[in-house]
Amino acid sequence: MLCLGIESSCDETALALYQGDIDKSLLEKDLKSEKISYREFPQGKLIGSVLASQAELHALFGGVVPELASREHYRLIGKLYDKLLYDTGVKSQDIDLISVARGPGLLGALLIGMAFAKALALGTNAKLIGVNHLEAHLLACGLEQKLIFPALGLLVSGGHTHIYRMNSPREFILLGKTLDDAAGEAFDKVSKLLNLPYPGGKWLDSLGQRGEIIPKLLPLPYLNNDNLNFSFSGLKTAVSMYISKNPQLLTLSLEQEQLNTDNIELNNLAASFNHAVATTVTEKLKRALLKEKKGEIKAVYLAGGVAANSFVRKYLLNFTNEFKLPLLIPSLKLCTDNAAMVAYTGWLLGGLGLHHSLSLNAVPKGQNIPDDYLIA
Ligand code: ATP
Ligand code: MG
Ligand code: FE
View 1 (spheres, protein in one colour):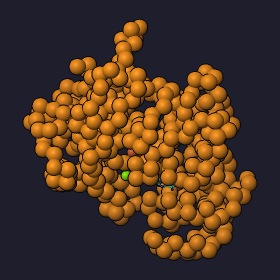
View 2 (cartoon, helix red, strand yellow; view 1 turned 120 degrees about the vertical axis):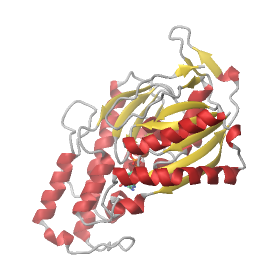
View 3 (tube, protein in one colour; view 1 turned 45 degrees about the horizontal axis):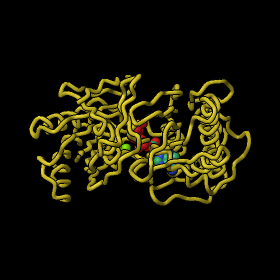
View 4 (spheres, protein in one colour; view 1 turned 180 degrees about the vertical axis):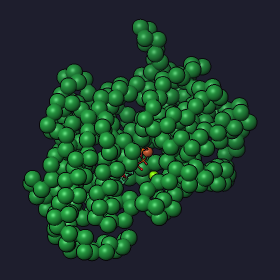
């Protein structure tokens, strides 16, 4: 089965092809629930991938401008598709399944990918499947290593901070989420307060690596409770107050790629901020593990742009080592938005016989994505 993946949920236009035969003997039907799953996961191959990032365009505005994002997707998607076919020697007629990120994301941006996917499905008779962009972020681990279930998944990206219990590639149960800013958003807003370039997560990370964690400089946000949700807005306010009391932190003009790394106070603030975020996500994951039935969880997944953060990685690795669980993290370029994860997720679910009709709709951020697959 050859599956085309299409990603256009935010500011990356991306397409990828994933190929592999799925042996029917790997499938297993649960008689009670009638659900089909894999006895063992099939292996395929990513045969091509193209991506155009609009990051530079949106950096001019300090954040993603939805209308511009849609227009850029519209301008580029056809050209990128042609390039993918040229690079791989694949013809449109060879594609068996078209997997599109149906949400969550910016509605206008999603609709460009969706319209392209549907038109292609109609024109080639390929089947169509809409996948959850966030679940695809976590399943991206399967492009490089064997998937393990049941597991806990932590998705920390620009728009979301979610903890899932992952029972199978199809069954994700949301255990906790952010009540306000996402982790990546908190990084970006704090770096904006510090006049760092946008998006600021990676800059705060590298400054933090040079600094020292100062205990009590910043609060550990939203830990003093019993739940699995997050709230990062108080942490952002604490940074803002610290900066207003220490205006010397802003005396440097920081140009892109030429970060001054000698400001000890700034580095210490960055280290303390990274520490606060990493401690919080790790503590909530630990809490989730202890709340789930003992011994059931076999692995922990980490994905999304903030999975690139050195503090988050280190703290999660310590935690998973303590509980003797494998930690699955996609390589850096598969952590941020890409179409390989969409092609792979569609291929896995399509292999179970799942698909959608041409009346599939995009689901914007904030709305639930239904489990409304059709079964072939
Ligand atoms: P979503 O999937 O929720 O719609 P997204 O896909 O747009 O969001 P990603 O591309 O996964 O988000 O992640 C982007 C975020 O990751 C940005 O907020 C960026 O600052 C952050 N980020 C990238 N590298 C690092 C790092 N090293 N440390 C902290 N944050 C980082
Ligand atoms: Mg992006
Ligand atoms: Fe994403």
